[in-house]
Length: 323
Ligand code: SAH
Ligand code: AVI
Image (cartoon, rainbow, N blue to C red):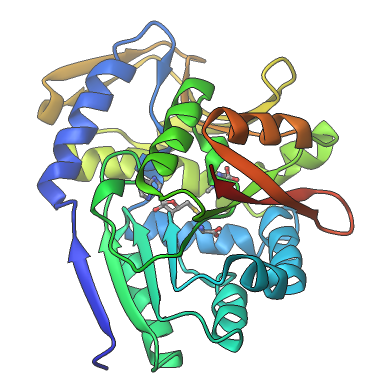
């Protein structure tokens, strides 16, 4: 295969440094928290892929339905030459966009970016093999830090799928959208997937599945902590918790200590005490209302030109142009 290159904007050392900072800030706070990025080592990425196939986890299926139906409209509107995908993961759903953009005859390059080196490499190589006439330029990087370094020929379409935008707290979400806008030229495009507000029972089930895959995914953050910072957290000491926060309209995933315990984190110079029942917040997953998505895009300098949902109105996809 000579149509794929993989570039690293984030080394293992960079990740360890970033985790150390997050641990010092989040685990010494009175309400302990960590950013949602830290689930995704090789095992975390595999677990996420398993989650996407669970009967309770509807977002991936709902977004795929929209992409399969609307990809030709995306291709016609954008005429994109480069498709950049942030937080790309397996890029499975993205194939609908690649197919439509190739049929339209405009696409020459695909730039998947992800912080998870294993997931990114596997996906980039699989797509390069299946699309031999496409230049695939995979980037191992952080979408909160390395956007300015992404390659590609204009007009570009940036895809941010899966509802990952919901994993930012609100201020970070606004900053992220502005940073995407800042690297685009006027007239270039953003395709954004957002999970929608719906009944809490459906939401909680999606984050607390019967087989316990999401629980294992949640606990994987402790394995990452152990591997990167030499910590001694025992995942068996923590219960998986998923709650709907009706005020913020987000799901929170937490780990709840089963007993009083101390986690030693030598790589961050920290001993972290947990009381029995104490929670560590590991993820927020915000759910959106259509108008809020439109106005947040506008605040960041995008005009939304299309809004599509799946038949059951569970998940929304916005196609927006950089002003
Ligand atoms: N887009 C895919 C995957 C979603 S899972 C889908 O729709 O199914 C979220 C992805 O974002 C994971 O692959 C994870 O490794 C990646 N990710 C999380 N934090 C990131 C960061 N800061 N920079 C780049 N990628 C990140
Ligand atoms: C990647 N992200 C959009 C997923 C979500 O639904 O918030 C991660 C996830 N967390 C638990 N299950 C899946």
